[in-house]
Image (cartoon, rainbow, N blue to C red):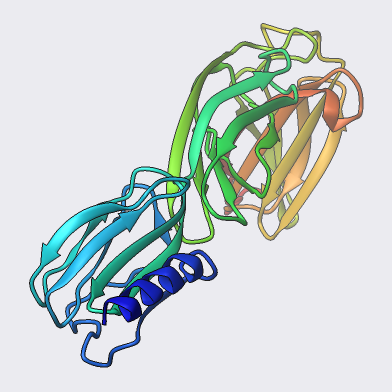
Length: 297
């Protein structure tokens, strides 16, 4: 019996590192208990344990380490350790030449380090956010929240973003690995107005100029931006009454015939040329056109 026990133990030590497994061998009387947990994949911080149906000697072998006895445990006693390092771990229950074994690879939890940003912290300027990342099991995804109403999801550790308004923003990134384990990191940035593009135009006003046929004549006006570069043109969009039209407008007003008695939304941006890449922040306004009832110029 002693010779068989020694041989079984040798086979156990040699084979334990071959593959991930939970099994029993050499004696059908030693088996896994119904209460034995098995929850792969395992991560640092998880419980690594099992239970068998007979009294047995338990031991644990961490990666690169020796075998440590966990003592003799009675039947159906869940026995194990809390994992503290990544790598292959082997938990054994041994009894008179038979054994049960839990052999699994343990992963590090996904972990994010410092979030960095490159680029001048101006509005309407490309900023590259990057984060250091380690641990976890791939593939991993990175979900970014810029706290300006915009989000992004990437498979890599960097993303490019523009802010459209000056202010202080807490940028948050969350990594999720292939098994749903997560970690988060943040970066606070202070964004100022870009001196190379016009600032925010003044409030939008509407004046009713009269009616004709089935249309209402309105003048839409705004004031030039008080900050940033000088606007040489404006990107103007008027939407309502079932239509939407966009114009390049060289002045701070626009006269249009519009559908009467309807709500219209107006957006305007100051630009240094007729290219949206040179435009500043968007001013939005809304008004209802005159219904022109009994009014025909």
